[in-house]
Length: 133
Image (tube, rainbow, N blue to C red; front, top):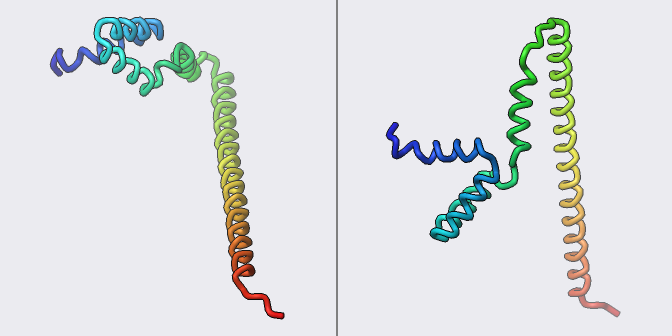
């Protein structure tokens, strides 16, 4: 890989290591020097979710990496893996429940819409029929 092609990745890694403040400083500098550069950096920060993730995402990645490390105690590691597996199962079951709930709500709203539409069509037909006396 050439040096020219890798410098954006190196710059991105360097800025990520320094945090959101570095990204903001470079964006402001880009606006001061040449506004399209600042605008491009701002768009990139928003698109890549760097503006809103901040240190929380970095902390979560570190926490995830350390959560699977062995403690050295076999019984505790077995308990921890079983608990994590159980929590993942509960999470997937809950997500499935929420999906079913959303589908039921969507179906209910659609059925209400269709009933309302049928009622309006019936009323329109009733108005168009001549009244016989």
